[in-house]
Length: 601
Image (tube, rainbow, N blue to C red):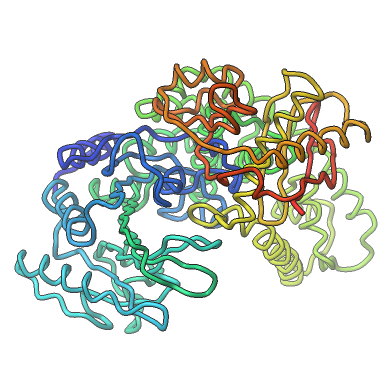
């Protein structure tokens, strides 16, 4: 197995599939383009959902790319060998073209024949079947034939080379229904000792590392029932970072060629040898650089808050390492230099990235000082042994970002006796309560792929186009979409404005939207190259995120449309399908940004 750099693996993957008649498409922005159902693009599949649902892709039926992604649901896992907040997902797709046999064989041909990974170390999982769909015997047979050609007898069952799992591990579907199907995952045996006699391929002990997953869409979910889809799609996703670990014979992603210089810079600044904190800083500053590159700035809500949290978490771990001076800018310089080999926008936006990091770090250092004041007050008011009742340490952390380790150290400096067992028990209990609330609140945001494709969400998505047109009519043509979010229950739309809408303006916006609905306007789209599309919609938001071939959706007659917007869809076919539009709330969400929430009755 030849050692390959991160960039070489990436290029080999794209060229391998290009040679197998796949068109290379660019990575989408981390910020979903005109699709507010998730905060960040979190898989290679996400930007292609409309095409997996049946829309024709301008680049054809076979596609390949390397998509930059953000996932924060596992942020507490960052610091181990393989978890990262931002990463690249290698992806290839068949849109109703080839299916299981070619998909699995292409994957293994790339891993084994092109990269030189030892076939003896490859293992696979398939769907075990249930009341909704049978066991994926076709994939099992394909795997067995593939292994047999390479001199390996692959048996199926516990502890065998091919293992079966249920829907939790080996099935993919959208939460709102639609195309779905079994998965077949590829794992690499790292050579580590099994954790126990019960160790299996999907065990999280680290012996087996998942390096790829083929989603095989052949069913359609409607309500609680599953039926044949009538077409077939393949979505492959593979972790570039994990392949780099294997091909460079490293123990963690942070030791690979593109990450190690960033880690070395953190270690150079560190006064303590705490590898987890060092890795967290590497990951979070790299992630912040990517997110800022794609147009997000720190703030109090959603994407902006996640960016702020990443920066502040990095600063907090800098304090744990004993780094006293501002340091995020120094780390970012190395991260930008390394990853600009892949994303040249990092170099183009370097000054802005560094400025935002430096400003945010300075702000956070001030809040840390405020947190220190609160801890001193608590110390002064403590008469007995401190037990951290009600998890006050976590409340101080959430309010000021003041780390519990520093909280504990400060109490000890103030000569306060601390019940350490109770301190950590109560802190962790408060933290776990917060995590449960966060998971419930973010469930719709962080699921793989599109969070919802229900009829209600599609209708509300269409209504946002009508709302934007109405806001332009009432407030002026300078109004544009700043951000939005859609659930099956309501739409949310952010736009720049110094003043809230008056009650009269709210009624006028509602009237304009409902008039358009009552007119029964048809909704159609056509594909245009980027320059043509920007001439049709010159005021389009998120211009820098568009691909070369994009869709323009028209509401009404194309020659004289009621509305024309750049969007990937999906939409209803006619405005009559929408029902009655009603604004239920408006609020401030930042300097000069207003938010409208609305429903369809």
